[in-house]
Image (cartoon, rainbow, N blue to C red; front, side, top):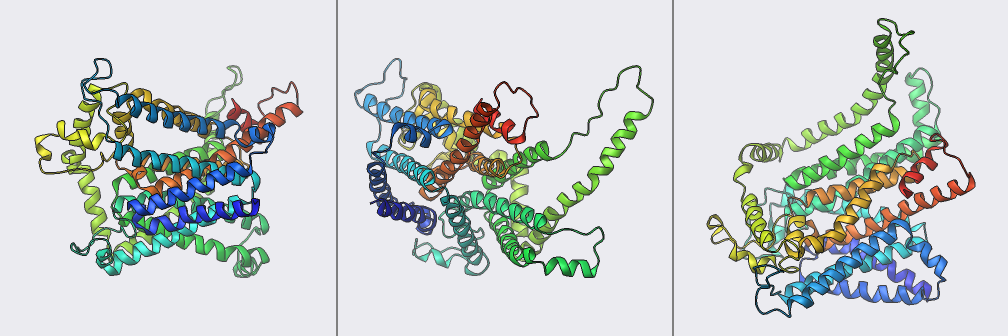
Length: 522
């Protein structure tokens, strides 16, 4: 039976990460309803298989961060169900709940509940699979990177050569010329959101391959033609360099695809996630340039300047070694975009800087903020924003019928209120503290940093778009969230073990891994 459950879990993961994106992100009801049914059945099978697991082992599966994430998600689901049940009891506006009628669209709410339950089920399946088979980490990462690569090259092929005729399948009566990379998603923004997590995983895998290659060979003091030839013919080079080349090409292609989407939300998410990752990298690896304070009696004139100059001279090779790869990527972007999309990207950036104040999204946000002001604590009802927005719509949006608010966090707060959004806020705070507490240089800490920054990039992009309304992106986020909590739990448990093995040790420099895990467990 365990083999059947193991096979079914892998099949569901392949369905979520590979199949869903090619059904237009699973925005059609039948695609994500069938997937949700498969997730529900597999979740029941997994729960039945592990029903005899003793309490200590089960507590180990869902300890620390996994337990917190699962508890907050279940609390959020319970809040949704209670809100819908209570709001159905009211026929008139309630003086405490707010001036807006609390009527809820049951059809829209049920669709949202199915998506939330599928998110929870896939999270539980992935986490239990990793607990039983830790080697499944490589499988998940490979599938995510492969899905990102396939979607990237399909999207680039559509953008460069097809000009929209592939959309005859989706809208045969409305064939248009596409100036943005979007297929296989309906919305170009959704394509950019989907590629954020595979891009960060590709960067991580490329970095680990480079570190492994550098440790596998011995670099000579002087690099001549003979030495370079020996390095390239080294056994480690023959194995790793081709893999690094494939990952580098895939990384450049993903960057071009994200640039071709012209999605400002995707650009913002990539910039914020990359900046946070880079700053954390600097904090861990780069020594401080600050000059230590000398006692007043030993301080000499000009000594701090000499020490600072020495440190800067030591850091110049490090700076250029980190500067060259991004410079190569930027040159490749300019080379590939010059013939197709450079003008489009420049016009998009110009619009964002000069004319974005007239963007209709700001009107949507302003109207929705007035909606939130009427029911700040309990919201207008889960997935009920569309039903009530017409009461608050500004005259400037007359004739337009927006389906989503183009800001998932704001729409969540408007629909669920402060009380309903509180569990997710706690969840983000816990994960944010974990990200800031990762100071180790071991492989687990590095992978956790990349995964958390990838999640941060998607959440940041959701401030200006609606990626979590696309089932394919939501399911990908669920799998990566489970993978992240798996590594955070490992780091936290290693902290507990190191504290128990060295009782009374309060030295801050007792070990990088111990320091990292102690911070996480706090």
